[in-house]
Length: 242
Image (tube, rainbow, N blue to C red; front, side, top):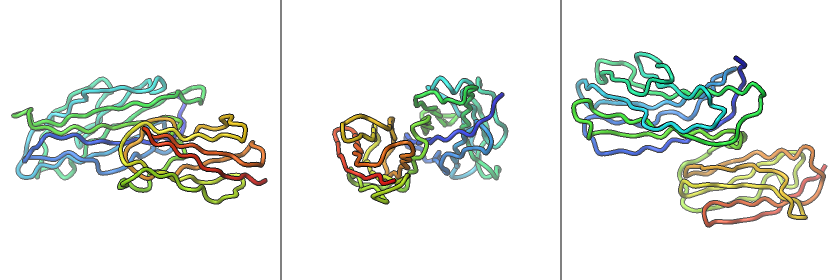
């Protein structure tokens, strides 16, 4: 199996129904396993008192074509095969490690990533009372997410900042903010209005983001970058000087 380092981002949304017995929340960002095609993201399942039997169910899995090996669920007991959708284990004060994680696996023998985005949803429910549950969506975005870093998850409004440095040679950074989760497009155009680079093209969660733009191979001159997020549209100029 060819192994490649995959740059990606996983965005996580928690959906919950009130439960006084346990919680199920994210505790880490996406972690790319070195020299591997594996991406892992971790959550913590905590019981408020005693020990409870909790059922973890993978209720949804929608992944890009390149993720041919799907995903696997891991808890403090084991990492399970990709075709195992349900696991039951006791959680509570008797267990030192109550983490639950999702591991994504991608194989691309041509070293060209397939376009797309997807997600896995895990449901944690009480075995004795399935109406008490939490759900967490583990979202993965493929190539477009390379070079994107979320620097804050608390924003109140849409914004598109001036790139820095500006003028630049050959790379620069662009910051933008979105106050709700939605489809985002960030594209670069030349003076004639021709699209020369797509930096972002997919769903992002609430937050402020920093995007790297490498203009290697482009001629010196003025360029435009355009952000579209829902009904918000903003365009700014930048200058490449070589």
